[in-house]
Amino acid sequence: MDLYGKDFIVSQEWDLEELYELLDLAAKMKRDRYSSRWTRILAHQTFLMFFYNPSVRTRMSFEAAATELGGHAQFMTPSAGRFKTDKQAGETIEDAAQVMARYVCGIGIRILEDKVPHYGAGNEMLREYARWSNVPIINMADDRFHPCQGMADVMGWAEWFGEGPGRPDYGNLKGKNFLLTWGSGSLARSWCSVQEALLVASRLGMNVTVARPDGYDLDPEVHEWTRQNCGENGATFSVINDPETGYDGAHIVYSRNWVTADAYQDGMLQKQAEIERAMAHTGWTATVERMARTDNAIFTHPMPVDRGNEVTDEVASGPRSAVYDIAENRLHVQKAVMALTMGNL
Image 1 (tube, rainbow, N blue to C red):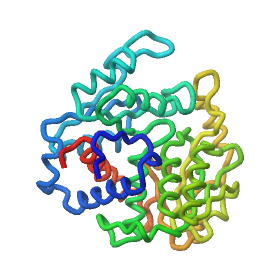
Image 2 (cartoon, one colour):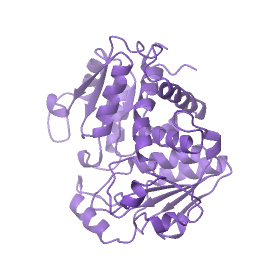
Image 3 (tube, rainbow, N blue to C red):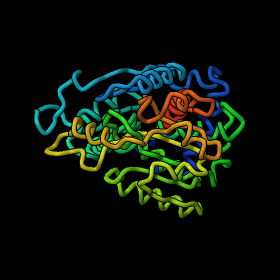
Image 4 (cartoon, rainbow, N blue to C red):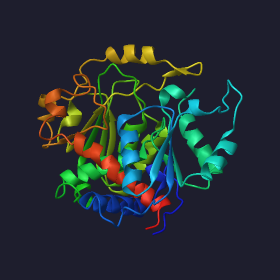
């Protein structure tokens, strides 16, 4: 299967067989992390990391991935240049993308909710870079999707329901019950990670439940894709506004805060208003008592965790928490993405 040169902007745009190819390679790389099979794949090549928003896990994992593949990851922020926006003159994406592509083997871009004027603008920017670049564009998280996180999530779930680290069993996920529940919190988080979780869970045949307060519906297109994915797999998809009953019989619980669909006004994210609105919705925390209603579920989260709001310490640090395994999997998944789309395998 030839994935060389392919962009990775949202998992839904890759065939299921392509996703399995990625995940299979990630597991091999995890089992044999420093094998000489991998350490020359990006020899003498540079991967550009273009960060509009900072991140501990994303920067560290991509830099480590490039190094372990024998290459180099170069860090860049918008302040390093002058880029054209609605409010300032500067270099167009057409020019920037084509110049960058002559220096590097791939371009990763991270742009989240507080750096865009409206929902979807970050994803649109990535697609504009993909239009002009002749090297792969890798989504390091935009305001709609976070495909590398989604792959790390599903790899971690399959390891817990498989034979352990580096030995996932994706067949065991089919028919499992996945609960994505809105979490209380003092943060105004984007939809990107939770929407990828919906897509990957439904692609792999899980029954999906979204629990959220009224007013916190996610992207209608993502809901429709999730519904279609579930239908193709004979699985179910439901949306409820009850913080309790979704836990009943769940096998995987994902508790995360996210903003409302009305978060943008006059070209700006209304962050403080979103925080105040979220804090008014108490009682949406993943607790030991709620986890006891599940079918011995694992707890999953993309991090950073808002402890005490989205989830209690007892759950986040408990024996059924997969959060650190999933954080580690970002490294292995991203090595596989880079190897398949940019490398010489």
